[in-house]
Image (cartoon, rainbow, N blue to C red; front, side):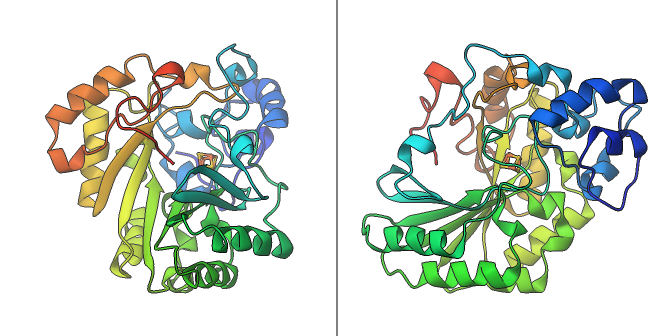
Length: 321
Ligand code: SF4
């Protein structure tokens, strides 16, 4: 079992920490030069290097196949850029917008559909750009919900997060704030009392936790989630269906049960084809999802299978974010 006290950010650091074998170094350096790499100590801790099918390693350790191009892949598969009226805002559906505060993440998932937009050094929304984004939201009364996403908004220092939350809460027609994050699992130490206080404004606020395998919900992650939930912020989940990670009924069911036991409402397994991620797509995901829906309680399988790739995207249950 490898261990590290720092986030691993390069192929050579993965070798040093014994997450990968030295013979993979040259190949994975090429991948890392193209797509960001980060695996936090919390996730390194969960990797079993003796298991060639380890579900955590499969999500975060780069793979040479990421450099293969496939015709169906898109750099911006859900069209963020085409729906961006001002920097940092994506306004795809009338009543809700994405507000992308930061373009970095605690970990870089190999299957991320925003992988062309996120990475170290891609920065945060500047003060002036944030004001422009908030002005757009304030002068657009049909915006009912604002979704903080990115990148991971919980990478922001609590003071900056508090500033954004307070300014959003002051806009009367914004009734709901939703925060999409991987941090309670990837870097639970960041979910401090100050960070949780920053999220509390009196306005309806939900956290959507990105989790793909029951193993991710270890003790530290559950404690971080409890801190948020106990502060009155309900937690929902979002999962990505991945080949060899969670695309069989048992694994998917175990994930849903672990989430519910964590007081988290399960929603939205998704898949979208960004560059270099075709190899992670699961041909049996839809079938597993359908079977899982009957195999676990209805409240644990609500909204499953809401989006699938390409032509079938969104067919089951209408628009997603
Ligand atoms: S945490 Fe989310 S935005 Fe960041 S790399 Fe993973 S999937 Fe992409």
